[in-house]
Image (cartoon, rainbow, N blue to C red):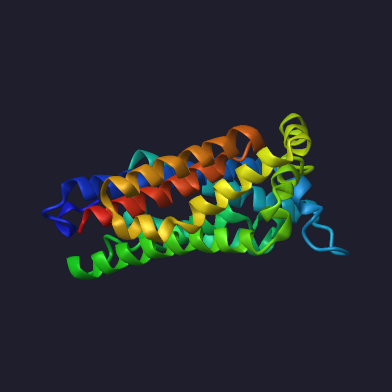
Length: 254
């Protein structure tokens, strides 16, 4: 990105560039996954309104273009930070509406990250760029907090059963892990509350900044790595990784 936006904070600019690359990986993975699985997803699109071959082909072209745009961000993150992120945001937002099952946490996080990163270099002054950077970081923080609060309100999450059900879903299941959770209720409950505590505590560590935030981010990253390995949700890891980097970059400016 244009380092003049953060003239005294070259590491901050580098971190935002890395966040843009990671967001590009998330777009690449998302685009490829959708291109390969669009026929199956199309069956879920709208009950009573099956998608025809033309609709599938058109959307496969769109998801392929999204993957290519993500690859471009990886090669040159300045494309993302100079408005390319906004283009990707529009495509992801459309796909979230057109493919209803696509509207999961990874896509929401991608929207948050792309909305902030896509305007950083378009702002007419460093002050406005900093405001935009803070906006994306705060939204990432709130997304984590809200996810934890939402889980806490669900009895199945509080008792740990939802963890076993999540890893035993038809599309993203891991039966071997699911049965371990189902047969060890205390372990499942401990895992569930660990996830809840990690997400709910995000605002605290974001305010603290420094090494406490870095320690929290490492724990969050390990959680996303576990989700990616167990459930095969690679795009979660990259989308939330870009969000974590954005938070770290913003707190490094203080």
